[in-house]
Length: 286
Image (cartoon, rainbow, N blue to C red; front, side):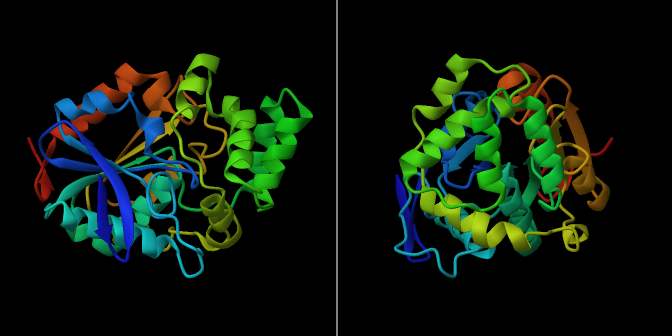
């Protein structure tokens, strides 16, 4: 389904019933499909609202990304919340979706009962750590070259080129890479090179939520994979957790960037229990 909001159209679909949990995908240049079917069982506890950000996936592609930033994508998410008739919700952000979820929580925290930040960071101010992690994992020069192209903001020529680049480095994102899982992830994604090019060239250089994280008062679950090469716990989850006044941190020891895939059962249990501890407006006590 598509929601017409903020002069654009956002694709969205729901799984389950109950209180809403909006799911923000990463990339950018990807879409919501890489979460499925792995997150779907949470639909037994909440209504999962999957959607594609403006300019990504099955959502409307703008003629130009000029003027579009994290504030735009956060405003879109809040407009989608209102469109769906939800006064309050839980927000789940993974990877780049976690960047946008932090922006949302700062600007629209009054609409949140809880915030889950999975495998993300408050700033990408550690390129040498990312590059060193890539070199340590790389099996081919092509993989190192592809990482360097992303870090340098080199534009992808087409959606197909972005798909191929991500295919090359996808093994880096797992502690135990399974090629069949890799194929499953990639088969449904509608790639957007324009979105990826825009964020790497324009948004990431100025991205830094560290000065504002203390403004987020909503209960937050911060998640990391111990073997995550691009948002390591030290640079990502630990800095977020240290800055948030009401947060818990869980590090998945046998995972990379996708703990909801590599340690699915544990992930669903921990997230499900944490969701169960939330009440509207505050956490349960006692």
